[in-house]
Amino acid sequence: NAGVTQTPKFRVLKTGQSMTLLCAQDMNHEYMYWYRQDPGMGLRLIHYSVGEGTTAKGEVPDGYNVSRLKKQNFLLGLESAAPSQTSVYFCASTLAGGLRNEQFFGPGTRLTVL
Amino acid sequence: DAKTTQPNSMESNEEEPVHLPCNHSTISGTDYIHWYRQLPSQGPEYVIHGLTSNVNNRMASLAIAEDRKSSTLILHRATLRDAAVYYCILRDYQTGANNLFFGTGTRLTVIP
Image 1 (cartoon, each protein chain N blue to C red):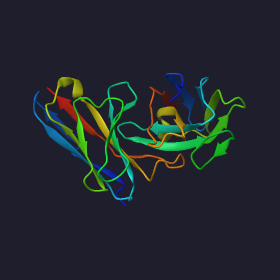
Image 2 (image 1 turned 90 degrees about the vertical axis):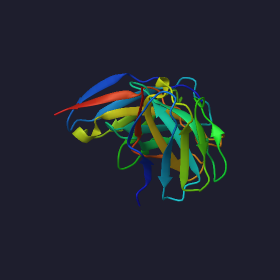
Image 3 (image 1 turned 90 degrees about the horizontal axis):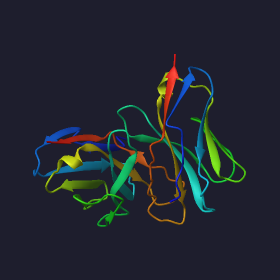
Image 4 (image 1 turned 135 degrees about the vertical axis):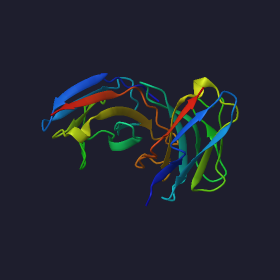
């Protein structure tokens, strides 16, 4: 199993450009998450999904949109990138909402917005 | 979710035990205590979790105070690979989405 994979690994954008980050998992997990991590900080939840076709806002959703058209994929979109969105983005997935289920994280996407 | 307090950093000698403390004085009866760690340039990985009783797994042990207001993650024999940021997180099992709220964690340095 590849686990959780993220595409791309690195990206540089100019202010105002748009892009989509792709997260894929091959563990048949129901729940998927997008986090961002700024330097010296912990991770903050952007959006999450509890199943195919569903999404919900997390702690810092402004400036981002998400879609979960297929169970194995969770896309994070930036419609008009801003320098404040320079960060490392992590995707995670888990089997379901139960406490026993650990979250599995991808390797991250490092995004720089100039 | 209730907050946790951890030291910013700790050091340990290689092959010695490490005790990483976490205070959670406002913990509720339905909060589980989770620990994740983040190795350099990687995503976080699950370490261990517990509710009231001490827990052991292949990675670590979790010691939970009787009043549950604090807990300690124990690495029995630190290796250089254990150098990471360790996060103590409370999870309310009544909340359905299994969201994790990360603080700034404890950066563990392992000295050869």
